[in-house]
Image (cartoon, rainbow over the protein chains, first blue to last red):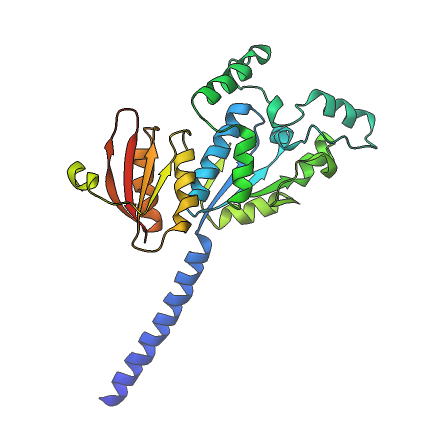
Amino acid sequence: MENTNEVTLQMLQKQVDVLTKKVGKLEKNRKDQLSIAVVSGDLDKVLAAMVISLAAAAMDTQVKLFFSFWSLSALRDPKKHPKGKDFISKMFGMMLPTGKDKLSLSNMNMGGMGPMMIKMLMKKQNVMSLGEMFKQAGELGVEITICEMSMGLMGFKAEEMIDYPHLRYAGAATFVADAGESAMQLFI
Amino acid sequence: MTTEELKNVTSNLVVDARGTACPGPLLAAKKAIGELESGEIMEILSADEGTKNDIPRWCEKVGHEYLGFYDEDSFSRLFLIKE
């Protein structure tokens, strides 16, 4: 009789071990973390990404932003002028917006009138400016990863990007790994 | 809590976030919460309607006890107890 009990206990212990391992894995898989792939460089969409990020960070959610393609324009610092670019990179650099204050709207851009009006309305309605949002995001520990491949594609150099406290350069696998362990993933 | 009860609450800290729209009031509350001890009461002043929904959700998530709100002429007062 005693022997049977022992066997059952051992079996239970084994099952508990297996479950503990699984739960640990599940918890690791789904962190209280938000990953956003920010691809669009439109003012409205970058604004949306930043507002959601700030709200999440304020709610103690770890936020990881992956900036790629057009969104890189939002991270350019207009005061920085890198040297040594080839012809096509220079052309691209001239055609793309130099920083977050120069982004256009995805709708009703009207040759720059739209963004001007939106910025006026934002001020009137006490909405933070994009610049202020980046500052707050930095203070709240929002991480920004810049897609290395997009940098090369657009001919941007690290020297022309904004000074941001939690900035790094990486590839798509980094986004996949970050997004895989995040409870929330968005594509903007 | 009812409006009458809330009006009698003595707050340990008042956060005036009337000059900022979403997500400003939430950020202001988050920044100020560190100044309070556990069990102390925070009062948030907000002119942003969405805050009335956002603050209770924030409390629910991070563990503070949301007490409720009442409206003034052009803004609302929201109350919570720090976890």
